[in-house]
Amino acid sequence: MRGLPYASIVLWFCAACGMHSYLWFCAACGMHSYAGEPASPPPKRAAIMDFELINEMRDYETAESRAAQQQRLLLIDDALRNELRQRGLYQVVDSAPAAELIAQEKSLHDLRECNGCEIDIGRALQADVIILGWVQKVSNLILNVNIEVKDVASGNTLYTKSVDLRSNSDKSWLRGIHYMVDSIEEKRQYQR
Image (cartoon, rainbow, N blue to C red):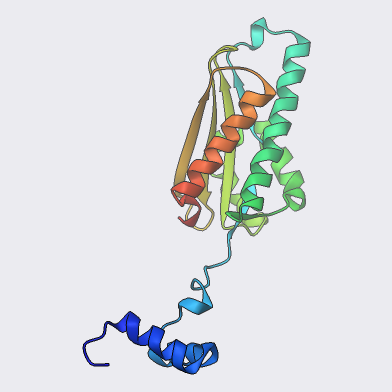
C-alpha cells in the first residue's frame, strides 16, 4: 500500500471491508463528509414592516390608480415575507403584538424616518432585525423598491437594497421583490 494516494487507500478499504467499515474508517480518520454540512445557525428573527409609498405623482392620480397602488403595496408586503420565509433566510415574526405601537408611530411619521422608533418596534417583537420597505414613484415608468435592514440590538443598518422598476404593474413590482431576495440570498446578506 506504500505510495498509494490517500483516495486509493480509502477505496481499497471500502472494497475490502464493506460500506459499514468505510463509515467507521471515515469517523476514525476525522472525515465527516458523510454527515453533511455543519449545522448552520437558525435564521434571524425578522420584523418586516409594511411597505410605504413615496408618491411624487399623487397630485395627478385618480382614486382608482391610488387604490391599485395600495393593493400593490399589500402584494409586495406578502411577497417579501413569503420569499424570505420560504427560502429560510429569516424567521418572519408576526407584527400583530406590536400593532398598536406601529399604528401610533405611523400616524406621526413614516417608519423609515422616525428617528429610532423602528428599533422600539423590533424590540417589542423580540426580533433580531427589522426590515423597513418603501416604494418611490417618480412616474408610471420610473419607480424603485427599497428595503433597509437594521440590527435591533445596535440600531445599525446592516444593509440596504434598491431595485429600479420600469413599469407600474403587479408583475413588475413582484419581479422587483423576487430579484431583491435573489440578491440577498446570493450575497448572503441575511447572515449579517
